[in-house]
Length: 43
Image (cartoon, rainbow, N blue to C red; front, side, top):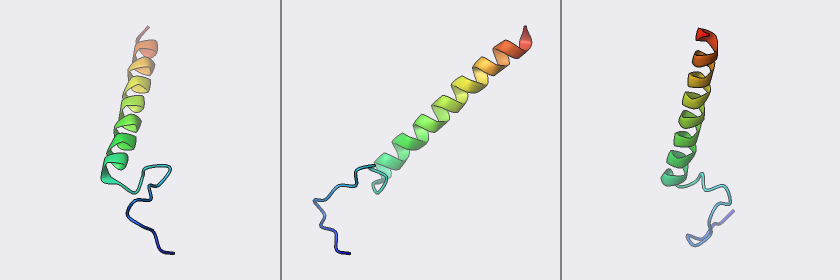
């Protein structure tokens, strides 16, 4: 398996920036879910 530098991973997970974006998305969705759950629980 030889990959040239110009080839880009379709998911973008090979680059640190892609990993950062995915991680940020996961954290953001988790935060929103927790906030929503907390508001519903306090009623």
